[in-house]
Image (cartoon, rainbow, N blue to C red):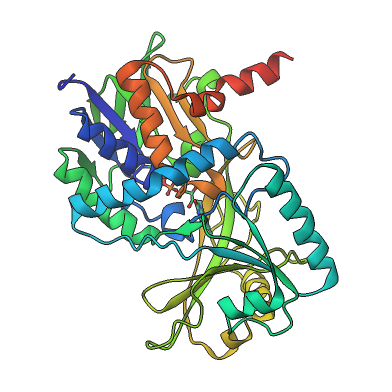
Length: 382
Ligand SMILES: Cc1cc2nc3c(=O)[nH]c(=O)nc-3n(C[C@H](O)[C@H](O)[C@H](O)COP(=O)(O)OP(=O)(O)OC[C@H]3O[C@@H](n4cnc5c(N)ncnc54)[C@H](O)[C@@H]3O)c2cc1C
């Protein structure tokens, strides 16, 4: 096993986590990253690990995978911190979704009954209880949902830690190395072409996020149906001695979208996020920021006076059914780890485990089995 070589295309959270876990198993894992590792969707993310409050009708099939990965996160974070010596600020205060008018209350009621039917850890609170937990929210809050099982992590610190952990486990990260082509001979992957060189590999793992479909050399029947879905965000600074918020807070649905606030331990509050079909355009727009601020101010009026710290946008890798694509393809040795859409930070541990299991044992964990490329083939055949 020690001489097995795996090339991972893309150094976002998915590629780095997968390569790290492969390296821990003694596999020779090399990550090829076009730019700086973790600077695309992974950088742009809010780091919420939130399968409970975010559960919506239509996503029932994905839920077991999200919950399983959520259960894996505490150990994943602990192992990562231990090996890298870098804290990733895994936080367990929980998340709440608030209602400001009667319509919002009805929407929360609907959401709550759906989530309870699925056995999720979501509790109903009246406005007073919500304000006790978060006294700086809008005083007109009528009701809220709270989940103590929805956690968060600092995704940028996770990247920093993963880079160290990967190298300390014997893996290799090559940044500024663009994969120009995946080399397939007959029906078997042979490696990748990067930096004008052929890098031979027994397995190639595609983890190139929103760009995965653009990789050359993948036959049409193995190309993952993934597209970019833009998300804009901003952050504000809180006074050093007062974080103002301690829980993740979701505002109600509005015509301009939905807003959430994520307090961080480094005196920032992140505000996200737009969901836009804009191709590969990553520009931050006045309209995008306006919508985010409008939503944030409605829920959390003190934001008005806080200094803006940063604005940014990233591209979520969205698949046709918004669920990830994991495991084998029609090409022997070509493995997918793409399409994580809004949940790539949450899904990193289970994705890494699924790819490791597939490469070492030839099968996927049961919970990951519905998420192979096969599901699209069946749809075509119908
Ligand atoms: C605004 C926003 C908020 C989000 N919030 C959350 C959240 O709260 N919780 C959550 O779980 N998820 C969240 N997500 C989703 C999450 O960030 C993504 O699902 C996840 O980061 C995807 O990781 P990835 O490694 O697949 O992709 P990426 O991080 O995009 O990494 C792909 C990498 O591949 C590289 N690459 C591409 N082509 C090549 C090539 N030819 N050769 C070499 N390298 C290549 C890219 O440079 C990039 O670094 C959010 C996303 C956005 C945009």
